[in-house]
Every structure is written in C-alpha cells, then in structure tokens.
Amino acid sequence: MSSIPDKHSVPLNDGNCIPILGLGTCALDKPVKGETTEAVKTAIEVGYRHFDGALMYGNEDEVGEAIRAKIADGTVKREDIFYTSKVWMTYLSPPLVQKALTKTLKSLQLDYVDLYLVHWPMALKPSDKELIPKDADGKVLKDDVDFRETWLAMECCKDAGLVRSIGVSNFNRRQLEMILKMPNLKYKPVCNQVECHPYLNQNKLLKYCQCNNIVLVGYSPLGTSRNPEWFSTKNPILRNDPVLIKIGEKHSKTAAQVILRYQVQRGVVVIPKSFNPGRMKQNKEIFDFQLTDEEMELINGLNKDSRFIILEELIDHPMYPFHDEY
Image (tube, rainbow, N blue to C red; front, side, top):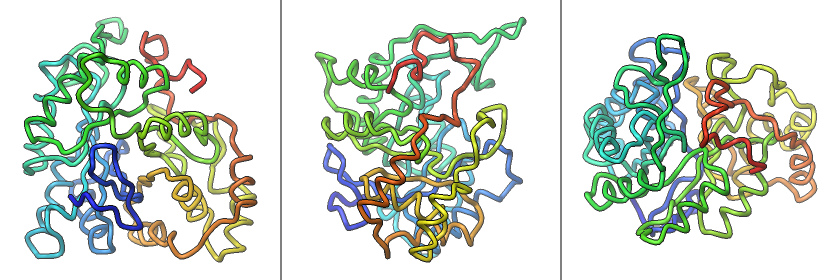
C-alpha cells in the first residue's frame, strides 16, 4: 500500500492512504456461489483497487479468491489493493479479536489486511455460529465488553503486522471521544465508517472527524438493498430524488454519480456496493465533473437525518450508537 496519496486517495493519520472510491462487498442477500468472485475480478479489471469487506458478510473467501487470481495473472500486485475487513460484535472480547482476524486472513488467503475496523461498538456474547446470538426465548445475548479494551487488542494486531491501519465503524462522537481520550492510546482510529448519503449527510460527525484527523468512510452512499431483516424499508429511494436527477441532467450524469461526486468533494470516502458490471463502471465515472457550490448546498438541503440501517433488535443495547444526535 502506497503512503503517497494520488488525486483519488485520502491520507490517513498513520501515514497510509485510502482510495476515495471503493467497492462494497456486503452480500446479505445471499449471492449465488461464485458471484462475489466474479464481481471483484470484474471490478479490478475496470480499475477498482479498494474493496470493503467484513467477516460477517460471509464471502471473504470469494473476495480473496478474486484478488489472488488478479495478482496471479499480473493485473495487480498485492500492494495495489486496499482491503478493509471488520471484527464482528461477537468477537469484541480482547482475546477474540485476533482470532476473528485470523479467520478473515485464512478466508482471504492473504498475509495482511490494509484496514481493520471494529464493526459496531456493541458487544454480543461470543459465538462462531450466530451473528446475533439469542437465548431460547429469542432475546439477544449482549456482552458487557468495553470497546476500549477491544481497541487495545486492535493495536496489537497492527503491531503484529497483520493489519496496516485500524479504525472503527458505526461509532458516534461520544464513543470516538472515549477512544481518543484513552490514557494508554497508541494509535488513533484512522477512520470512522458510517452510513452516509444526502438523506443522512452526517455533517456534524464529518466536521468532528475532520477536526481530529479521522477520515469519514460512507457506506450505503446510494441507499441500500431493501432487505427488512437488516434495513429500514420506510425511507424513500434516494436515487429517485428529483433534485439529484435534475443536477445529474445538467452534467449528463446519473443521480447515483451525482451522489458519489457530492461525497468525494466533501472528502468522504465512498464504498458503493454493486455487482453489476455496468453500474460498477458508472460509479467510477465521477472524476470528470465538478459540482458547483450551489449544487453542493442543494444536496446538503436534502438531509432528513434518515437512517436505512438501524439494527432495531439492538436498540436497547447500552452501547447502541444512534440514540445520540451524532
């Protein structure tokens, strides 16, 4: 991984860099076997170098297979690829953090990941089998792990050379501050990956992160799949917004391209998920136009503080991040 930013990457506070556009690989809709492998291969062929994955997505073996195939055929070298993974809520107990990372590396068949994140600040009872373990009555089994202890284990993973950079995901400002104020803090989080799009523009959290030299990475930048198990289906479809469509028409771009360009101009790293080759290419075509200040303000004005991802069954967890304003 290069420590020198190019025009399409963002410097991290540890000297590494992250490409500002990546491909999300979340596949909660249970893709057919081989679909993720083919999608990641195609993405590499059309120029993607940043891939966002996680242990809980259940497809890191296919992501790794694709990356290794494109290394083997000479398309890329390992250092050209930026891969993010995440430690799931059932592995936040400090002794389990490296165990989860080892599982990820074994699935990928790679020696290290470029960025490793604490997926959520909420700990659940350890489980290798269930993403959200429950008792016989269907009640979620929470754990009382302090994520600051988890962070110390993350630092150990970096020191061991298993990850290049470490960060967090779905943390609110108060939770970020808890890490930043740790007296024994060795490495600051390089990023906070959160849901971010024009209906949830995260302006306050973005400003806080920028003041602390933490990059904001926006997931679900185009909205989400409508899987009701994980996502709220109440919100309108973002890409159908007439303001975004009209701005797109002015630039001969789609609403999706306008949304991604908006984030890039704010310095937000975006990781849209699409396994459709045509959409993958379209999502990359955002560096040949510029939104005006007036257009940026129009898009800012669409903010409704509307979340697609709420994890309703964890809403009473003491570390649930979305009760705070930001």
